[in-house]
Image 1 (cartoon, rainbow, N blue to C red):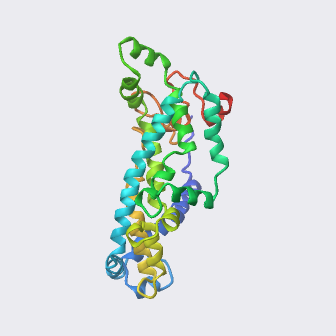
Image 2: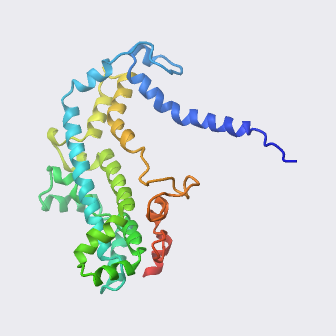
Image 3: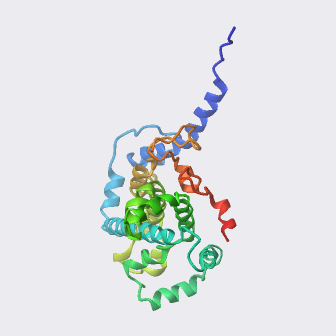
Length: 304
């Protein structure tokens, strides 16, 4: 006789409590942004606006600097993401196999940059000497190449079957055609991951704008948001909430999508439905089933 499983009430209650703890702050931010000052500043939980009010948003968008911040942030996000993905992919493609001269030394020097930086003053002087100070490009170019992105991309590319490249060479393809027509289509998932990291990083960035780009026409959204929050009485609890929504809404909309075509077996207990049989986690860590070595970051050390 098969015993019926009792409903796991405690488990469901714990999940419900955790959902409330994590979801409610975001929901309250939305509610406060559409509330009047008196209701927003009153203590207690708020699940719905008492009166639908747009005063906070009107106060924010009455300041023209918010549009300057949006324009600069969108520009740096789009341009920076394209450059980061392009440079990372090209560098990883060139270093995907150990056959090139100085492979170990080059990889060591790249990884070395993850642990030791030049410092703020030398970086500032370099940027000044390069003529990037107080230009839009200072928001993008210094962070185009990153060791972490390179490692992730290179580990994935090195896991792709080398026989696929050899077959393409036999069919008359050159290196450029292999890079674009063979390797690139197989790398869509890891490129999506690198692009997502770049988008979030550029959208949330503020320090480089504050230090290297002085000028009202070079303000980014996060510095504008900080200034709006610090302004006096006009932006109270409802205003602060509206300011947060203005800054975070684009990321909330774009960042909630899974980059893979199906559920990842490592994250969600399912299997990815993409034609190469790779989960997103497997593709990022280099443990996919392209027939390669399948090293993740832990296998990187062995390559030296």
